[in-house]
Image 1 (cartoon, helix red, strand yellow):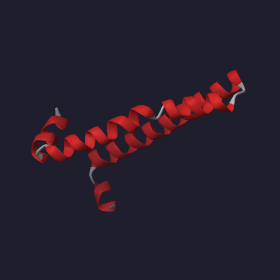
Image 2 (cartoon, one colour):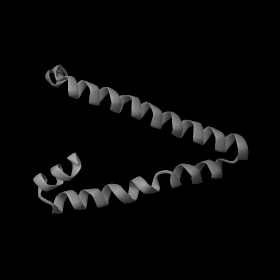
Image 3 (cartoon, rainbow, N blue to C red):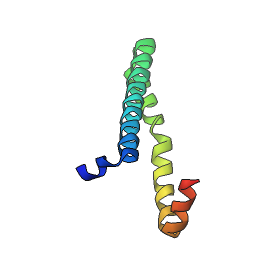
Image 4 (cartoon, helix red, strand yellow):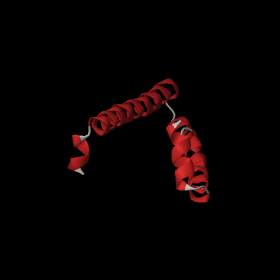
Length: 81
């Protein structure tokens, strides 16, 4: 795995993904904190936490179906554009 970091493009990609993941995590924590501070309700916090995951729960299986049914060369070419 460490051999991959010798490529400048991979290192740049990996660093960008790490920064993006940190930002996403901070957004989730801030949103949850704001909802709890405004409502003082654990139920509201749970509803917001669950509804924020609905797009992920719906789109990941759909993406898997599309990836399984298409040629890997075609899907790779679509991702590059």
